Image (cartoon, rainbow, N blue to C red; front, side, top):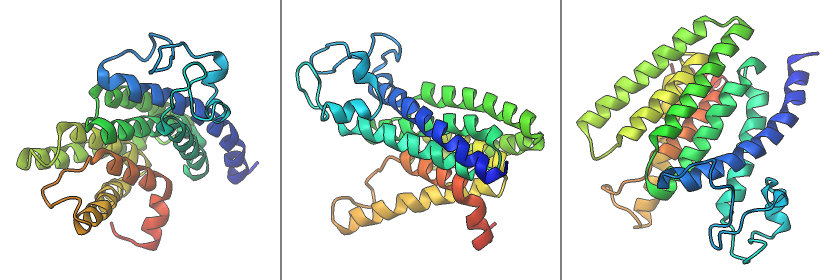
Length: 262
């Protein structure tokens, strides 16, 4: 069976697992910023406190069946819940097709779920919780070791370490020079992104980070032009860094082939 057939075969379970991972990411988004546990109490309606039924916890299906409302009090369920599940599943499927080896799929799915959760939190409360970054990094790094063992790409671990160290150094320098322009959470997140970009190739590290700045610049310019922000306004950088990283992971080699930037 060829690589394309294997990727297509892996895409279906990846998408299903992505729906479940997206549902868990939604719990992380709701609870971690407030210092709550992602395990206890069990899932419940935030409006009335009624525990969710098993049928209410089916990703996407339950949201559509309930028409986006609690089955007990009919309070509206945030659209973010549905979007988090769909985006996570979509990225999981994309990774199944775009990664150079399926051995790396579990590690990069962990990264994707963590980046989705961190992006949603940063957009909501302007924070990148340290526990989410560290747990994503720890579990993902273990996955990278397994991927290196399965694919024989042991030198990729060294590239990952170099990528992470380089991103830490650059972003820490920016944080030190312009402390009001970037939070230390961005430094941690950039380090995480550098590790995963580096495992795929050191040339993807500057590309992924550059894409993050480019993606961030577009809405910033639009907001300034529309008069809804000034040059001193602060935008959460986490979602843009996450987007640049995922684009670099999925399409970086193709971009570098078409535009040999580095």
